Picture (cartoon, helix red, strand yellow):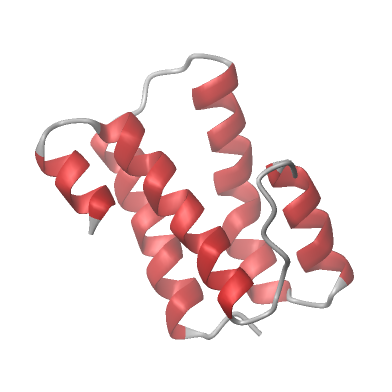
Length: 98
């Protein structure tokens, strides 16, 4: 819901980040990975792949690359980027990630 609030306010960068992190949090809840603030997004991707969690890995891998470009490469974040992150979160949540 925080991501939706940010998107409604036009903060697609914040909304994208919230939706992406919601996916990571959801995967932690279902024990597909272990969330720790000190870990990188690519460490989470490696954990998903090594743990055999192919669906969430496939969903989040392209988003993780987008996250890097947009946050570390300072690329702009558009509404479509947020919607893509939100859709990935919904698919990961629906599939229970395992």
